[in-house]
Length: 223
Image 1 (tube, rainbow, N blue to C red):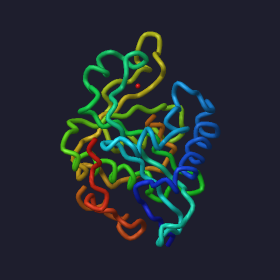
Image 2 (cartoon, one colour):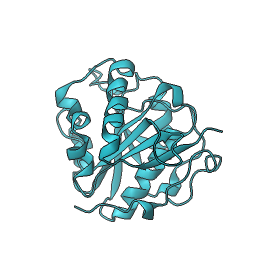
Image 3 (cartoon, helix red, strand yellow):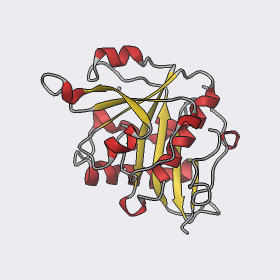
């Protein structure tokens, strides 16, 4: 069975994390690098490592010693969704400071269907719960990305679907995820490059990927 090491990113992981993110926006999303959307990809240290309440996680292939290639990423920050471009009521429901926004949950195609995205999300939820200052968890995704909508529906609740707007909006689906990481369900569709912009690990994944207890990466307290 293939093993992965999931850990908070350090400076030595940023080139690999950036490569995963850029490959995803080019190959899976088809948008390529757009400065107003992807500034955090170019400078993940400023976006996720420096702020004490933010985090960036990486999954390394074969990294029992922590030296494998970065094959997946997941990030969290304290910025709520901005209006515009997001709907006003969504921005008001998820204010910055008390909202943990999940971002950059990306898995390289050849490493999907192994539970990595779900495990990374569980770690982000554990980080948010341990912080003590977050009151909600939010993300949005592009349902045009294969597998993304099904993945997030298995973990969260749709709070707004822009496809139902008269003009179709941006076509984005907005989700709320339960802050208690134990609420994450173990049933898992295929891991996807989930454009999102605990207690015990889920059953069935405990031997495949080493679980990180929240105290191994305590919260750093500082669209």
